[in-house]
Length: 254
Image (tube, rainbow, N blue to C red):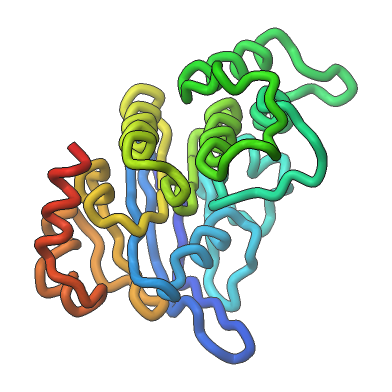
């Protein structure tokens, strides 16, 4: 029997004596697509960092393919898990295709550089995300939304079986939000990629994800299909908004 692709067990994170995450247990099964939602300050980005192995929890453990993340080297993690941050700073000029090619570094043989398979993966990612019109451009000169798509293409080129995304639609206009969500669904259904995406838009979460986990004050308060996890009373209590907004967002996402 296959175990979870990624699992957090009793994860607690404290900062300056203040709890950020409280005893979070979460399992991401192979080929599963999960949206992580919650109000500002709920601990979503912190949980994503713990799952990625870039933040060590105060208590609890995270396993990637059944192995404790804390015992794995960064290169080993990068071959199994890709991360798309909200925004990454580029310290010097890099063309779009060069940024996307960074996704292949975990797979390249030492001292040998990029292989034909790496170049093919980069070209395929650029085509899949639709960045052909940006080739040759300095990525630092792109709009925030365009840079976000470049980071997404870099993760696609990385071809890791697990993909974590922190607000992948935050800088995108409506059309590109939907296209990005459709790409994630395609990566999940066609490539078998297991996905966790932090989202603010409950409509996108409800429309494009089979499972929604709701965080509030560092705890998991709901976990299940969108119709169960985003119940009217929970949306009112946790988000303080009219549940009809979620339904409108779902219709919009289609």
